[in-house]
Image 1 (cartoon, rainbow, N blue to C red):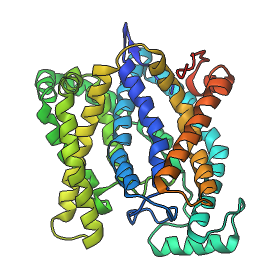
Image 2 (image 1 turned 30 degrees about the vertical axis):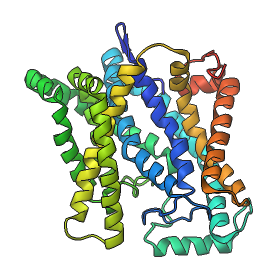
Image 3 (image 1 turned 120 degrees about the vertical axis):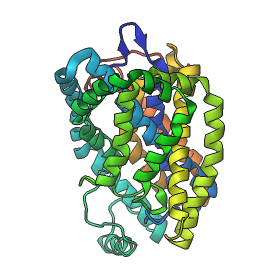
Length: 400
C-alpha cells in the first residue's frame, strides 16, 4: 500500500510480508465463508448446500487474528511514515495510496462484487443460477435477512470496509503522535512492561472489553456498512493506535520474536476455548457468565495470535527474498480484486455436487491463479501499480 517501511537502513521485510499475508488471507477467509456448516447468526445468507465444519473452524480461526494483526501493522508503518515524511506528507501519501483507490474501487469492484455475491446466495438458497438476479427472489431474500435482524437497505462496503476504516484511523495520527511523545515520559517502565510476555494479559483484557457489545463476543457485524459503527471503530482503532505506539517500544517486538513458540501454543490452547464459548452463547443465548467468558477467551486468543505471527515474521522472514517482496507488493491488488472472483467461482460451483472441501479448494486455487497472474502480467509494470503502490515493479515470478 505504498507505506514507508524503513527508517535509515532498517527495513522490516518480515512485517511487510506479514501485512501482505494478512491481506491475502482474505481469499481463504471469504472462500471458507461460502461453505460454513454452522454459520453464526450474524451471517444471515445461505452457505452452499455442500458444507463442512472444517470451513467453520478455518473461518473463525482466521477471523480471530487477521484484521487485528493488520491494523497493528498499519499503525506501526504509519508511525514510520510520519517519522520519515512528517504529518503533512503522510496525509498526502495516504490520500493517494488509500483514499483514491477506495474511491475507484467503490465504482468498479464493489458493484461487481455485490452482483456476484447475490448471485451466489440466490443459487445456494433457491437453486436459481442467473447472472441478473430475479427481483422477486431478491425481495424474498431481503425479507428473510430482515427477519434475522440483518439491516437490509443500508449500503454496504463489503471487503472495502477496511480501506474506509483506515481513512478514519489516519485522522487519529496527530493523537497517536501526541500519545507517543507522552509515553516517552515513562519510557523505561513501559519498555519493561511491554517487554514482558505477560503484557498480553492487560492487552487481552482491554480487547475483551471492546468485544462485549457483540453477540458471541465475535466482531462479525456492523463494520461492513458505510455508516460508521462506533463499537467496530473502537475495536479496530485500538489495534491501530497500539501499533503506532509499538513502533516506539521495540521491546514488544523482541518479546514476540523471542517467545514465538510459547505464544503459538497459547493461541492453540485458547482458540478452541474461545470458539466453544462463542458457540455456547449462540446456542444458549446471552446470560450468565457465558458472554463474559467468550469475550475474555477471544480477547486473549487474539493477542496471543497477534504476538505469534509478528514473532514469526521477525524471526523467520525478516530478510530480502524474491517471494517476500512479491507477497508484500502484490497483496494490495490481490485484496482488491479477490472478492468478486470468490463470488464468481462460488456461484459457478453451485451447479455441481462436489464435497465442500473440494469446492473450497477449487475456489481458492482459481482466485489465487487469476489474482497473481493478472498482477504479474497486467499490473506490476503498469499505471495500476503506480496508482496503488506509487511505483512500477519488475519482480520475477516466484513460481519460477
